[in-house]
Amino acid sequence: MSRFVRIFNTSVGCKAVMALTGFALVLFVIQHCIANLQIYKGQDAMNTYAATLKSLGPLLWVARGGLLAVFALHIYCGIRLNRLNMAARKDRYQFNAFVQEDPLAQARVRAATFMFLTGVLVLLFVVYHLAHFTFGWIKADAFQLKDSEGRHDVYSMFILGFQNPLISITYILMMLVLAAHLLHGFSSAFQSLGWNHAAFNKLVRYGCPAVVMVIILLNIMMPFTILFLGFPSLPSAGG
Ligand code: HEM
Image 1 (cartoon, rainbow, N blue to C red):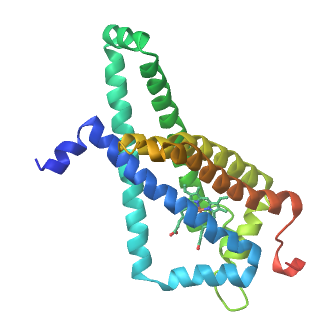
Image 2: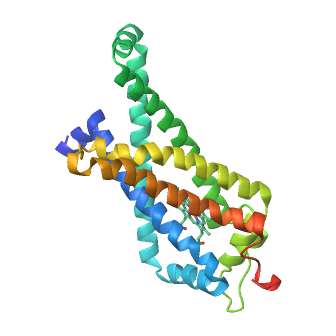
Image 3: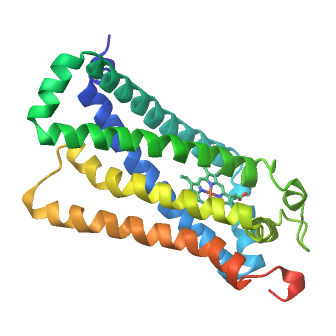
């Protein structure tokens, strides 16, 4: 067995992989949010961005494959760590004695369970989200739309989706779940990697939650303004 696989199979190794893949996923969420804000620039900006991405051809598939691999590793390690946690709990006598004596251990067990549950919900959201915007299985009529230049009309698909109260409210609630997952996960990834130098602990403690809150608020703003303020609107309605 290679050294990497041996380290990966330990709970410390698994935690490190979770932390590194978690960082990559946070970067993706930031980039994705900034890209989605094009919706406020109008139909041409949004559809040009989407068409440019598609024109990358094989490169786009490489990026998608990389993202999928990162997601898969993160989930695999999450399930593995949860199993290790459960196995420790099976040995109830030793586990309870250990946990009852150590409040820090209690907090860790609660945090791990919380991260697992919010992680499962985020995964369900991503599956729903892909079914909606990438595969066009939800609101299939909006997915077929083309703009005046014959491009996939991502702008109208986006707005028609969020004009539906059920879809918008689901997104907003799921963004709150994502916030809960990232508010704990982003800063704890630094701990998992042992990156806790005194000079930079304050930055991690306040900077990570601040970044998460800004991204979540921007993600909530999009369905919110479309559903409740009618902005931005469909091109035919003057948008
Ligand atoms: C309100 C928040 C969000 C909005 C409005 C949004 C919007 C979109 C849209 C319009 C697409 C399709 C883009 C296209 O066809 O060119 C898309 C794809 C995608 N989104 Fe989101 N998204 C949001 C949040 C998220 C979050 C939080 C995640 C991950 C945790 C995520 C993961 C993805 C993935 C993986 C894709 C597929 C990318 C691809 O096809 O290459 N999205 N999103």
